[in-house]
Amino acid sequence: MLNMARRLRPTSFSEIKGQETSLSMLKNSLYLNTLFPTYLFTGQRGCGKTTTGRIFAAALNCELLPEFQKNPQISLPCQSCTSCQMMKKGEHPDFVEVDAASHTGVDDVRAMLEAASYVPLQGKMKIYLIDEAHMLSKAAFNALLKMLEEPPKTALFMLATTEFNKVPATVRSRCFQIHFNALAYETLMTFLQEIAQQENILLTTDAANSIITISEGCVRDGLNILEQISFVTKEITEEVVLKAMGMLPKEYFFAVIQKTFEKQPEKVLEYFEEKPLALANVPHFLHLLIHFFRGLIRVHYKVSLRSNIFAVNEKKLYELYEYVTIEDIHAMMRCLWEVEGILQSASQKEVVLEHLMIKIATRNFSSLSTDSSYLMHDEEPKKNIKAVSSSPVKKSSYETKAESKHSVTVQVQSEKKVKWKQFIESLSSKNRMLASIFQQAIPDESSEMPVLTILFSMKSAFFKEKIADSKDQWHPIFVAHFKGFTEIIISKVIIEQKASSVVQSSTSYGRENREVSGQHVSRLEKKILFKPDEWPQAAALVKEFPGTVEITDIVEKK
Image 1: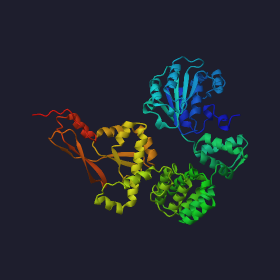
Image 2: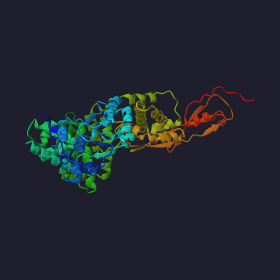
Image 3: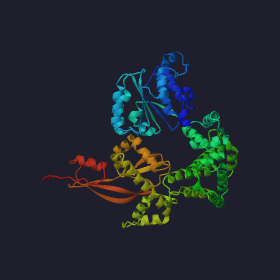
Image 4: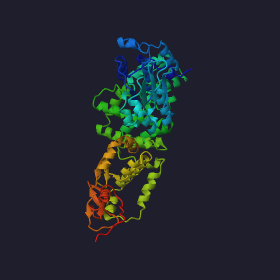
């Protein structure tokens, strides 16, 4: 017997919940008989992309399609004609569903493109649904390009993906994109209660609210959790849900928040001793914190909490809001974003979260990156910092004075440089040319979230254009390493060029330190030791790139 999520999968447009706009686009496309060569379905997991693709495919080959185009009130697909019955059994010869996660190669795509050139066997069109399309290789995408733009008249492609940014821009530009939203709180609440009643399950409102919180608007996750807990009992309460999923009750959560806002760190620790966070779902606790602070912001601006998971606890949010200011809430949110990045690589996640709550209780909103560094799996940043500090290079009096006054700032700067190095290393595995360009820059230590300023030690329009044109390639890697930062701004360090009439075999570089916009950064001074007019190519290289230019076969003029 199939599990609940598969057994209750919609088979018609009317059964799909919460995607009215997306469905209207597809149904109007059928009604007007205006079809696009390729459709791109995007959105989070479990919100109906693949299911909608199958229903749309069934409607395209349904025998009642001509009648629907005359009267859009007719239900489509009809589910009774030969084509619909074959789709229902998964035996339709003209519908091919491809899992791109297991068919990523160019050979798989070429075989599919060859089959697409043949006429349909049963229906009017051959339809290809490529699920998890972002998993296709670059070569496979390149093989698809021309076919996606101008497929045979009897072929239609649908691409479904949860990671829109990984689909090349050249592919996206050839598609008609339809976005599927996560289900709204009220929609998912009504749906779960209807399913529970249909399955003879007693589901309380608080229990449904907890399931919605865990599923994050994903219908499939919500159904899976409901079915999983129904194996324990048919009377599902909030306590049962929380216990089954390893989560703490909201009463406990509000009690911890109460003592945190009352600035009683010792009481917070007592709660954690009573119910250790190691036994709980730490990411879920952090998820609750984020939505809780979002709720407080809405309370401050007197906005409805209808879409917030704490909507049923609105009275409690108003009570706790009296303990903090809007500035406190913003500072706490910044701490949360920072901790979210640390948790991904922390070996003791519960200690990181406990540390966060103590800092909030003491209203200490300084950076947690250095405080929690001992909790990280990856020790490479520490080694890098140590290697720099043990370098035998003699420091200037300015640097010594700066270190003595701003020791904490130096640690943060080292951390940012380490992240920059890791970003370049990750990018190098994807695109070496881009990595070499970013390697010419250093991060500006004064940058604050969400914008990171990078300094180039040269004047080059080429670098700026290349970085802008390839944003879709480096940006996902950048935000993964720099949590809280969303954009990069390029700043140039001006270099003075000194020309000499002496002709030599190379260029040399001298280094000096200088204040640039309040930052102590390294500056490269170029000494051009040849005549630029006589060696235009060498002059162009010196202008754009740092390093040494060796000129051989020089003929001395007499």
